[in-house]
Length: 306
View 1 (cartoon, one colour):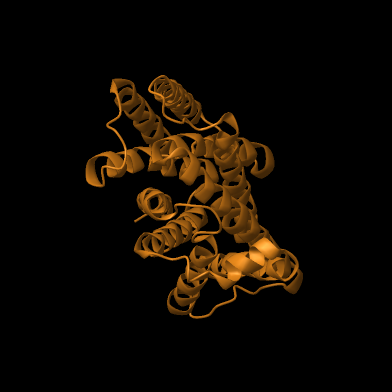
View 2: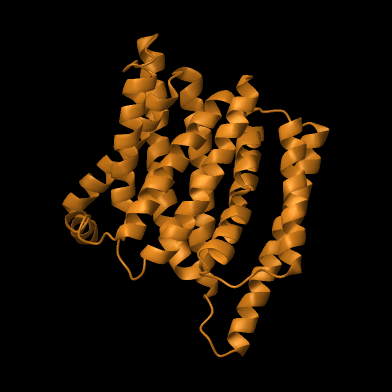
């Protein structure tokens, strides 16, 4: 199996894991507070540490000392961006918007990621890349339009729709994850040890929460209640979001950022299927949503094929 195909398969598995976590968060993360974010980072730290020991034999990927430390620094920054800001905003977004809306807004991730990959990493954009991006842009434009239409219908039905500010959580999550992909890629270019890099990212994320707990009462309270606030859905969410993060970061080792994030964008359609058909936590999407799914899938295939 080629490296590119390996990276694409890992990205697809990551999309499925994240889709499952979205549904589990929706079912378990009710109310305010941390509600599973810190615990999910702890799970990622444990999982990635085990993978580092089993798959990479505890290899630190060390070469030149200065280069290694620079790579570790990029991994640590990626951990702060993805596992602190990305996850905190994601959990809040799903609580406030629901699975489908939150997943739709989170799909700004590919656009941030591709833009950053082209400008910062110098990744080339071919004709198929451009066609794929246009297709996905059209698809998510339709999805966001449908989301706002459902929001208007909810208002007319005298239910409480999400406020405009609630969408900011999803935008913040998408931007945080996109920046994490870029910093993670920088780290991998310097230290070629994906599992080690993921472990460093998880440790840095958890260390951030631990240090914040010393100075900020809210974080201190969340830290103390890390296990008390758990339920079975939040445990499942922590496991699946951790697997999704590890699979996605591993995919970046084998494939370019733009391709990985585009394949990972299929998460929204998997999330919708799980929330509507399997767990029945949301209403069935309308025809426009299915059309958007077809267009986006075609765009992802175009980029992956290229």
